[in-house]
Length: 79
Image (tube, rainbow, N blue to C red; front, top):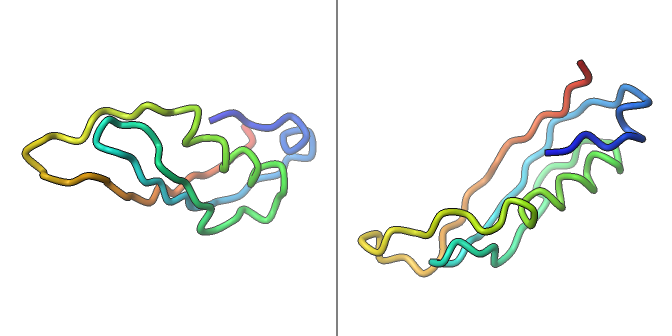
């Protein structure tokens, strides 16, 4: 993740949740902001995280799943 400069400059912090669905190949099918941080700059970064992380590792064939959906909690802290 990247800490947006505008948020860091204001010492903005927050917790958010992102739901990500990947295809068997590991490519991101969709991502959805489930819980925002309360800061528009941090929320914008949350929306971009899944695309930058793509591709994820492939889903093991023995799982026999075409997609995998998971929720990721993400915390932004100013250090």
